[in-house]
Picture (cartoon, rainbow, N blue to C red):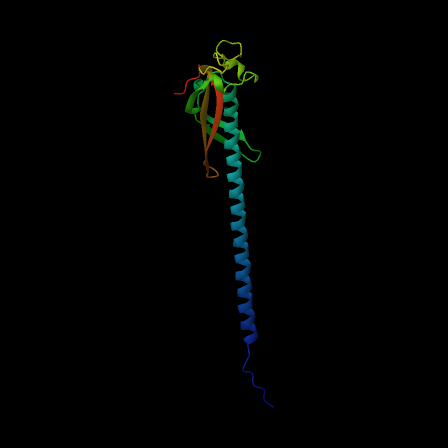
Length: 178
């Protein structure tokens, strides 16, 4: 009795093809995993860099609000900010004034403590005409809008962030808007 072996070795060939397909699937899964890891790392670095830039702006903003003469504040290059995960150096530009308007005494409220110093006679009381209406004249205050810009460029991570924050302030008449 003779048995024909026409499929001799086919099992080995099919097994090798399946092994190659499985190997390619595993290699692809590892590559996709590495790509996703890089993407999430880049997203974390971007978030940290943006947070560091915002912290530097807020530090400058504190000084702007506390300053008697905002136009005397200087730029701050290389402000060091630690986010916990990394330390970044942020360049904060000198605040720039965009708008300055004199405040009329008719826009002031003498009952508000913040508005009282704006009355030039120091009493905090507006002047009235013969009809009992407040007399409009320039006060000792201005409403100004200032911008604070900051930029971060971190060579090791490749992160680059630029931010601009505006602030509206009521300031004394001595504060100039260049």
